[in-house]
Length: 333
Image 1 (cartoon, rainbow, N blue to C red):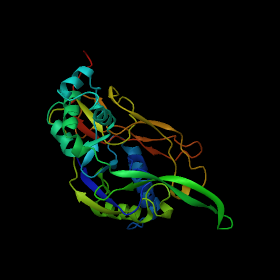
Image 2 (image 1 turned 45 degrees about the vertical axis):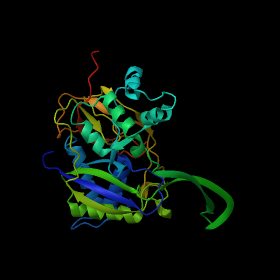
Image 3 (image 1 turned 120 degrees about the vertical axis):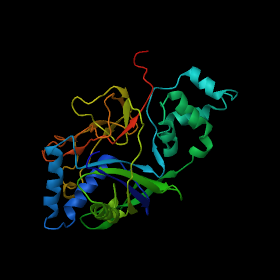
Image 4 (image 1 turned 135 degrees about the horizontal axis):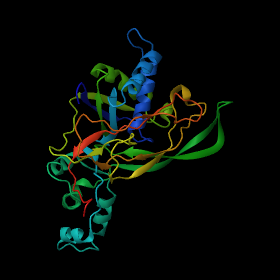
């Protein structure tokens, strides 16, 4: 992308996690970090206003694009045409269908695949047969328990008297196993320097990320790496988004996708009074969309307005983080 620099943000957890690393949530944390940090010759509020105004001035050349956060060396599994029963039987060969049922169900439910597998498949046309075959043959090394969910009990605090009440409440937290506690977030920016990003993510690392960050959740070490670009296909007919995404007007919408219903919540100074945004339906990371005119400098999505019932200045990050792919085209079959 002309004028853009690519970075990879490496995050190594120091605590449990409640909120997963999602592009729109990360963007909100970035905005509050800009607001609270000191900038040369500018107050944080001025810097943030300037940053966000660039999205309004030129929506198709935003100052920053950000992906979801992925476990180190993994990416979203491309969402493409479902595999047929005939193709599945060909892949199984002499394997018993019943004995292989766990593998089959698990592969179908996978949302992540190794980055090297994606890049290898993306050298040619990504097909349902080729993707499933690759995952089936490498199942044992790919399918590993990376984390466990545990219900943690907490005391209820009376905020008026600042004392513990007799009630307990429970909360599900993610405990990542050693070796699986590192994440990668991809960035493209024509606005921030590497030093700026180090300050911003350093602030987030210290103040915490996501739900219950004030109690130490979402705490991590951070490292910014140059040239963190993911190579797309040489010949493309579509793109895959690595971020939750809502198409802008006239953007291509024909493809394969899953959706997620987002209940956005405000943070920072806005967290105490009417913090809830309107619900939004977004395409999940991994969704693919046909676009014969795809190029690496093409932008999809927008910074959505009118997402809060009372405050018109509130916005929601809904840009795709597109990677060029070549998927089988069965639209005319």
